[in-house]
Amino acid sequence: MKKALILLAPGFETIEATTPMDVLRRCQIPVVVISVNGEDKHGVMHTDELTVTSSHSVSVKADYTLSSAEGRAVVSEAEMVILPGGFPGYVNLAKNKEVGEILKKYKREGKLIGAICGAPTALKANNIAPGSRITCHTSVKDDMTAGGYLYTGSAVERCGNLITGKGAGLSLEFALECALALTDAERVTEVKKKMEL
Amino acid sequence: MKKALILLAPGFETIEATTPMDVLRRCQIPVVVISVNGEDKHGVMHTDELTVTSSHSVSVKADYTLSSAEGRAVVSEAEMVILPGGFPGYVNLAKNKEVGEILKKYKREGKLIGAICGAPTALKANNIAPGSRITCHTSVKDDMTAGGYLYTGSAVERCGNLITGKGAGLSLEFALECALALTDAERVTEVKKKMEL
Image (cartoon, rainbow over all chains, first blue to last red; front, side, top):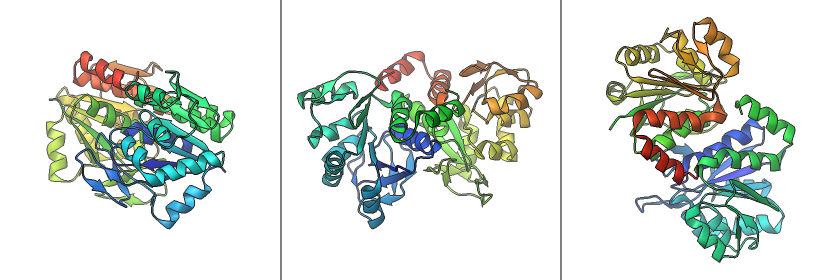
């Protein structure tokens, strides 16, 4: 079964991270949550902590830290990496060198990359597939366009192995698109029904 | 400012709990998360633990336990209590006597009660406002109807001080309706815009 990893940096957007966890696991797609170092909204650095606090003060426990052997093993095994937005979560992801290496490796190996809200800026920071059709939060649209990405303003975009989402209110649409990339449509339809969609 | 409390029992539905946390806090409504005792999906009892694990294995840290002095103080101060669904989370809420007392007290004092998915069964278990128009997950519809509630099948229902939601896929609609009950429409509209809705 294809595995997905979700990167949690301090100040992640709560539902942009938790919705893919929920939807993918409902689809029986194994999800591993990896914590990433970064500064919280008060400028305090968090290093190698399993519990990560969102931009709206929701503390979620990751499975592994990115620096752990287990964390590194999951990075190698997984078929998709998902980057939630949120402030300063997406800035933490965009400036983290290890995250950059993961994105370059996944791009090189033809694996899936998902990014929502401000997180597509991590793609730009690492020059991942410029020229791709993408969507992102309005506040980073100009930044992405300047990087050579084709901003569409859609709720969700899939372009090659890149899946992007617009913002927190479209977390569900983004998560469902990620699920569709990892499993069959029949299973996703069944899960939507149980979620009353 | 009106305060809301969200009850987290083992096996809560991930986004049914985290979406109101996110949306209400974005609306600057103070949200306090209270952990509730209960059995997880493996039948293991969890008592007075701050970190609670959802039905899809997402561990979220509550602010207080229900049994703590701070937890009890928040119950008295808040204007709304929100009950996420999820299995066995909603069963834990429905059979918990302290939760029952909160629901009866809130009903008596004319405070707001929100429940989504399977959680409206906690209303039935405590005979809270039978005869109300409600919605809930299809799987507990017959149970609610037998209890004298008027099931509409809508995404969200507001009837008096009762707000109910249908299921996980409608967590956002449910959270926005809860926000509207606690703050002004202008603020909610502004938050929706920032969420790209």
